[in-house]
Image 1 (cartoon, rainbow, N blue to C red):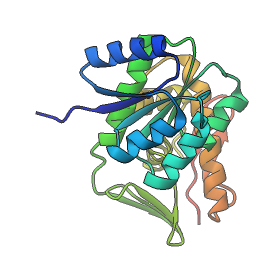
Image 2 (cartoon, rainbow, N blue to C red):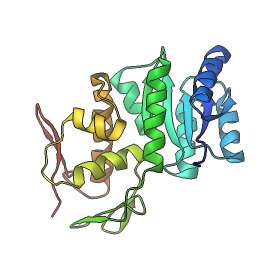
Image 3 (cartoon, rainbow, N blue to C red):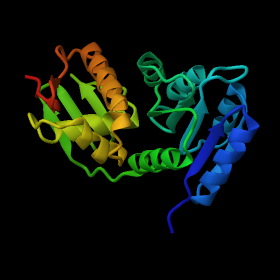
Image 4 (tube, rainbow, N blue to C red):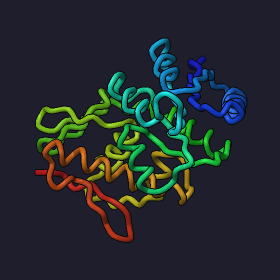
Amino acid sequence: MSRMTDVLVVEDDPTLGDVLDMHLAAEGYRVRRAEDGEAALARCAEARPDVVLLDVMLPKLSGLDVCTELRARYGPQPGIVMLTALGSEADVVCGLDAGADDYVVKPIRPRELLARVRSLARRLGADVGTAQLTYGPLVIDMAARAVSVSSRPVKLTTTELEIFADLAREPLRVCSRADLLQRVFDTNHAGYARNVDCHVTRLRRKLEAAGLTPAPIETVHGAGYRFVPPC
């Protein structure tokens, strides 16, 4: 029997916290709670969860600060879904820059949120095989879930790695946003396409900072993205 997925709900609104707790428990998740940023870090230090549902506007320490600290301490796990009433593209980018894997705008629709949690939990536990993709100075080690450029590690979130690996497996193949939504996020909801674009933007910045200029992800206008192997 597989291990239950642990979810930490970090939400200062007790009514919303109770609703999330109820829906997650009904789906079979083990749920813990925290109502402020400091408590969230303490809960993760006690027993690291698989997924954190993290409100942005929190007492004591903001959700963005908590996300940044979790990434600094623990790397790509736990998976982090930001929950916020702030839904502009700039807000999404801020959440992803802090290290979030996904971003859900309030008011929260429980079925949508559960789908996001299922998708993230799958990505975290996915058997990606042992293949190593090498393109010039770029190495994508699927077994280690790691990326390096000229032997220097590039820190990616779980979602960034999944998107990058999906593109890199078939160089020059044009992959639409709908394709990435289906394969990486397990959804065909067009409203999530902005998240794909933000993840790709973040990926490009990280790869360019690591020395791949231009980044090997090319936009094909009106069609999607493709991976262009670096020399």
